[in-house]
Image 1 (cartoon, rainbow, N blue to C red):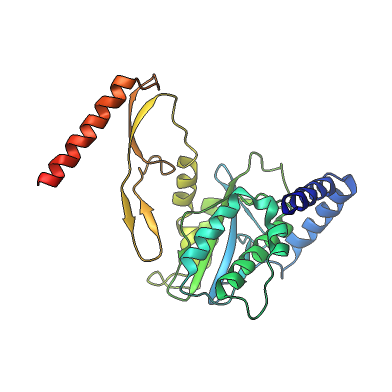
Image 2: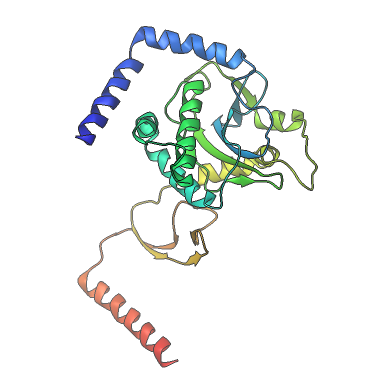
Length: 277
Protein backbone atom coordinates (compact mmCIF):
# COMPACT_ATOMS: atom_id res chain seq x y z
CA UNK A 1 0.00 0.00 0.00
CA UNK A 2 2.84 2.37 0.83
CA UNK A 3 4.53 1.52 -2.48
CA UNK A 4 1.29 2.18 -4.36
CA UNK A 5 0.83 5.50 -2.62
CA UNK A 6 4.44 6.39 -3.38
CA UNK A 7 4.02 5.52 -7.05
CA UNK A 8 0.81 7.52 -7.27
CA UNK A 9 2.53 10.55 -5.77
CA UNK A 10 5.54 10.36 -8.10
CA UNK A 11 3.33 10.01 -11.16
CA UNK A 12 1.25 12.93 -10.01
CA UNK A 13 4.32 15.09 -9.52
CA UNK A 14 5.67 14.13 -12.93
CA UNK A 15 2.45 15.07 -14.67
CA UNK A 16 2.43 18.41 -12.89
CA UNK A 17 5.98 19.19 -13.92
CA UNK A 18 5.14 18.38 -17.54
CA UNK A 19 2.21 20.78 -17.62
CA UNK A 20 3.11 23.78 -19.90
CA UNK A 21 1.36 26.31 -17.66
CA UNK A 22 3.17 24.83 -14.70
CA UNK A 23 6.50 25.31 -16.51
CA UNK A 24 5.68 28.95 -17.23
CA UNK A 25 4.74 29.49 -13.61
CA UNK A 26 8.00 27.91 -12.44
CA UNK A 27 9.94 30.06 -14.92
CA UNK A 28 8.34 33.26 -13.63
CA UNK A 29 8.90 32.27 -10.01
CA UNK A 30 12.55 31.46 -10.69
CA UNK A 31 13.17 34.92 -12.10
CA UNK A 32 11.61 36.37 -8.97
CA UNK A 33 13.65 34.12 -6.72
CA UNK A 34 16.97 34.98 -8.27
CA UNK A 35 16.12 38.68 -8.09
CA UNK A 36 15.02 38.43 -4.48
CA UNK A 37 17.46 39.16 -1.71
CA UNK A 38 15.88 37.09 1.04
CA UNK A 39 15.68 33.62 -0.49
CA UNK A 40 19.24 32.41 -0.05
CA UNK A 41 21.65 32.67 2.86
CA UNK A 42 24.35 35.29 2.31
CA UNK A 43 26.54 34.76 5.36
CA UNK A 44 26.89 31.80 7.66
CA UNK A 45 26.08 31.97 11.31
CA UNK A 46 26.49 29.04 13.65
CA UNK A 47 24.55 26.08 12.26
CA UNK A 48 24.15 23.61 9.40
CA UNK A 49 23.68 24.78 5.82
CA UNK A 50 23.04 23.15 2.46
CA UNK A 51 24.82 24.48 -0.65
CA UNK A 52 24.16 23.57 -4.29
CA UNK A 53 27.18 23.70 -6.60
CA UNK A 54 25.90 23.51 -10.18
CA UNK A 55 28.74 23.76 -12.67
CA UNK A 56 29.31 23.76 -16.42
CA UNK A 57 32.96 23.35 -17.36
CA UNK A 58 34.68 26.11 -15.34
CA UNK A 59 31.57 28.13 -14.50
CA UNK A 60 29.27 28.00 -11.49
CA UNK A 61 25.62 28.88 -11.10
CA UNK A 62 25.25 31.79 -8.69
CA UNK A 63 22.43 34.04 -7.56
CA UNK A 64 21.90 37.60 -8.75
CA UNK A 65 24.14 38.67 -5.86
CA UNK A 66 27.01 36.43 -6.99
CA UNK A 67 26.41 33.92 -4.20
CA UNK A 68 26.41 30.15 -4.29
CA UNK A 69 22.81 29.01 -3.60
CA UNK A 70 22.69 28.14 0.12
CA UNK A 71 19.82 27.49 2.51
CA UNK A 72 19.86 26.92 6.26
CA UNK A 73 19.21 23.44 7.62
CA UNK A 74 19.34 24.12 11.36
CA UNK A 75 20.92 26.59 13.77
CA UNK A 76 22.57 23.81 15.76
CA UNK A 77 23.76 20.23 15.40
CA UNK A 78 24.31 17.26 17.67
CA UNK A 79 27.09 14.74 18.18
CA UNK A 80 25.34 12.41 15.71
CA UNK A 81 26.04 14.79 12.81
CA UNK A 82 28.12 12.27 10.89
CA UNK A 83 25.42 9.58 11.05
CA UNK A 84 22.85 12.13 9.90
CA UNK A 85 25.17 13.22 7.09
CA UNK A 86 25.73 9.65 5.89
CA UNK A 87 21.96 9.19 5.88
CA UNK A 88 21.62 12.41 3.87
CA UNK A 89 24.08 11.22 1.22
CA UNK A 90 21.67 8.43 0.32
CA UNK A 91 19.12 11.01 -0.79
CA UNK A 92 21.19 11.68 -3.91
CA UNK A 93 19.77 8.41 -5.25
CA UNK A 94 16.18 9.56 -4.70
CA UNK A 95 15.94 13.35 -4.85
CA UNK A 96 12.52 13.08 -6.46
CA UNK A 97 11.19 11.46 -3.28
CA UNK A 98 12.23 14.23 -0.87
CA UNK A 99 8.75 15.70 -0.55
CA UNK A 100 7.13 12.30 -0.07
CA UNK A 101 9.70 11.32 2.57
CA UNK A 102 9.20 14.57 4.46
CA UNK A 103 5.43 14.19 4.44
CA UNK A 104 5.73 10.55 5.54
CA UNK A 105 8.04 11.39 8.43
CA UNK A 106 5.91 12.29 11.42
CA UNK A 107 7.87 14.70 13.61
CA UNK A 108 6.90 16.44 16.84
CA UNK A 109 8.69 18.16 19.70
CA UNK A 110 8.83 14.82 21.49
CA UNK A 111 10.53 13.09 18.54
CA UNK A 112 14.14 12.02 18.85
CA UNK A 113 16.83 14.54 17.96
CA UNK A 114 17.93 12.30 15.09
CA UNK A 115 14.46 12.25 13.56
CA UNK A 116 14.11 16.01 13.93
CA UNK A 117 17.53 16.63 12.37
CA UNK A 118 16.81 14.44 9.36
CA UNK A 119 13.41 16.01 8.86
CA UNK A 120 15.11 19.42 8.76
CA UNK A 121 17.56 18.10 6.16
CA UNK A 122 14.64 16.97 4.02
CA UNK A 123 12.97 20.36 4.46
CA UNK A 124 16.14 22.19 3.41
CA UNK A 125 16.59 19.92 0.39
CA UNK A 126 12.99 20.53 -0.64
CA UNK A 127 13.44 24.28 -0.23
CA UNK A 128 16.55 24.23 -2.42
CA UNK A 129 14.75 22.15 -5.04
CA UNK A 130 11.93 24.68 -5.17
CA UNK A 131 14.30 27.63 -5.40
CA UNK A 132 16.34 26.07 -8.19
CA UNK A 133 13.36 24.59 -10.02
CA UNK A 134 14.74 21.06 -10.25
CA UNK A 135 14.50 17.84 -8.26
CA UNK A 136 18.04 16.78 -9.12
CA UNK A 137 20.51 18.45 -6.77
CA UNK A 138 23.37 16.23 -7.89
CA UNK A 139 25.68 14.15 -5.75
CA UNK A 140 26.46 14.90 -2.13
CA UNK A 141 30.12 15.75 -1.57
CA UNK A 142 31.75 12.95 0.37
CA UNK A 143 32.39 15.00 3.51
CA UNK A 144 30.81 18.05 5.17
CA UNK A 145 32.84 21.25 5.30
CA UNK A 146 33.36 22.45 8.87
CA UNK A 147 34.93 25.55 10.35
CA UNK A 148 35.95 26.71 13.81
CA UNK A 149 33.01 29.09 14.04
CA UNK A 150 30.45 26.32 14.51
CA UNK A 151 29.33 26.09 10.88
CA UNK A 152 28.80 22.92 8.88
CA UNK A 153 28.22 23.08 5.13
CA UNK A 154 26.67 20.16 3.27
CA UNK A 155 27.42 20.41 -0.44
CA UNK A 156 25.66 18.88 -3.43
CA UNK A 157 27.39 18.97 -6.82
CA UNK A 158 25.86 18.61 -10.26
CA UNK A 159 27.38 18.87 -13.73
CA UNK A 160 25.03 20.81 -16.03
CA UNK A 161 25.31 19.97 -19.73
CA UNK A 162 24.55 23.48 -20.92
CA UNK A 163 24.44 26.90 -19.32
CA UNK A 164 21.06 27.44 -20.96
CA UNK A 165 19.53 24.07 -20.22
CA UNK A 166 17.92 24.97 -16.90
CA UNK A 167 16.70 27.96 -14.95
CA UNK A 168 17.56 31.62 -15.41
CA UNK A 169 20.42 31.68 -12.97
CA UNK A 170 23.66 33.55 -13.48
CA UNK A 171 26.82 31.77 -14.56
CA UNK A 172 30.21 32.92 -13.35
CA UNK A 173 33.75 31.68 -13.81
CA UNK A 174 35.14 29.95 -10.72
CA UNK A 175 38.24 32.14 -10.75
CA UNK A 176 36.13 35.31 -10.94
CA UNK A 177 34.00 34.21 -8.00
CA UNK A 178 37.14 33.49 -6.00
CA UNK A 179 38.80 36.80 -6.85
CA UNK A 180 35.83 39.00 -6.00
CA UNK A 181 34.77 37.13 -2.88
CA UNK A 182 35.09 39.44 0.11
CA UNK A 183 35.88 37.14 2.99
CA UNK A 184 34.70 38.05 6.47
CA UNK A 185 37.08 35.59 8.10
CA UNK A 186 40.83 35.35 8.60
CA UNK A 187 43.13 32.97 6.69
CA UNK A 188 43.84 31.21 9.99
CA UNK A 189 40.15 30.57 10.76
CA UNK A 190 38.14 30.73 7.51
CA UNK A 191 34.40 30.26 7.42
CA UNK A 192 33.02 27.10 5.81
CA UNK A 193 31.78 29.11 2.81
CA UNK A 194 35.27 30.55 2.28
CA UNK A 195 36.73 27.05 2.45
CA UNK A 196 34.23 25.89 -0.17
CA UNK A 197 35.08 28.71 -2.57
CA UNK A 198 38.85 28.48 -2.03
CA UNK A 199 38.90 24.73 -2.67
CA UNK A 200 36.31 24.77 -5.47
CA UNK A 201 38.73 23.55 -8.17
CA UNK A 202 39.74 20.59 -6.00
CA UNK A 203 36.10 19.74 -5.27
CA UNK A 204 35.13 19.87 -8.94
CA UNK A 205 38.19 17.83 -9.92
CA UNK A 206 37.20 15.21 -7.35
CA UNK A 207 33.68 15.18 -8.77
CA UNK A 208 34.98 14.60 -12.31
CA UNK A 209 37.36 11.85 -11.23
CA UNK A 210 34.65 10.09 -9.24
CA UNK A 211 32.57 9.56 -12.40
CA UNK A 212 35.34 7.55 -14.07
CA UNK A 213 34.40 4.05 -15.20
CA UNK A 214 36.72 1.12 -15.68
CA UNK A 215 37.08 -0.49 -19.07
CA UNK A 216 35.73 -4.06 -19.28
CA UNK A 217 38.19 -6.63 -18.04
CA UNK A 218 39.49 -8.51 -15.01
CA UNK A 219 40.81 -6.50 -12.07
CA UNK A 220 42.30 -7.27 -8.69
CA UNK A 221 40.91 -5.03 -5.96
CA UNK A 222 42.28 -4.24 -2.51
CA UNK A 223 40.01 -3.50 0.44
CA UNK A 224 41.48 -1.64 3.42
CA UNK A 225 39.24 -0.20 6.12
CA UNK A 226 39.78 2.34 8.87
CA UNK A 227 37.14 2.50 11.58
CA UNK A 228 36.39 5.18 14.15
CA UNK A 229 33.60 5.78 16.64
CA UNK A 230 31.09 7.16 14.14
CA UNK A 231 32.20 5.93 10.72
CA UNK A 232 34.19 3.49 8.62
CA UNK A 233 36.53 4.76 5.92
CA UNK A 234 37.85 2.84 2.95
CA UNK A 235 41.13 3.37 1.12
CA UNK A 236 40.71 4.59 -2.47
CA UNK A 237 42.96 5.90 -5.21
CA UNK A 238 43.22 9.67 -5.74
CA UNK A 239 42.75 9.15 -9.49
CA UNK A 240 39.59 7.06 -9.07
CA UNK A 241 38.03 7.92 -5.68
CA UNK A 242 34.77 6.16 -6.60
CA UNK A 243 36.29 2.68 -6.45
CA UNK A 244 38.65 0.51 -4.45
CA UNK A 245 42.36 0.45 -5.10
CA UNK A 246 42.90 -1.98 -7.96
CA UNK A 247 45.12 -3.16 -10.75
CA UNK A 248 44.12 -4.45 -14.16
CA UNK A 249 44.96 -8.06 -14.97
CA UNK A 250 43.63 -8.61 -18.49
CA UNK A 251 40.85 -7.86 -20.97
CA UNK A 252 39.03 -11.16 -20.45
CA UNK A 253 36.87 -10.80 -17.34
CA UNK A 254 36.09 -14.51 -17.01
CA UNK A 255 37.78 -16.52 -14.25
CA UNK A 256 38.18 -20.23 -14.82
CA UNK A 257 37.60 -22.85 -12.16
CA UNK A 258 41.32 -23.65 -12.06
CA UNK A 259 42.23 -19.98 -11.58
CA UNK A 260 39.73 -19.57 -8.75
CA UNK A 261 41.00 -22.69 -6.98
CA UNK A 262 44.55 -21.36 -7.27
CA UNK A 263 43.51 -18.02 -5.74
CA UNK A 264 41.81 -19.85 -2.88
CA UNK A 265 45.00 -21.84 -2.30
CA UNK A 266 47.03 -18.62 -2.07
CA UNK A 267 44.55 -17.17 0.42
CA UNK A 268 44.71 -20.29 2.58
CA UNK A 269 48.51 -20.22 2.53
CA UNK A 270 48.51 -16.59 3.65
CA UNK A 271 46.18 -17.37 6.55
CA UNK A 272 48.42 -20.24 7.62
CA UNK A 273 51.54 -18.04 7.62
CA UNK A 274 49.83 -15.43 9.80
CA UNK A 275 48.63 -18.04 12.28
CA UNK A 276 52.07 -19.65 12.49
CA UNK A 277 53.73 -16.25 12.98
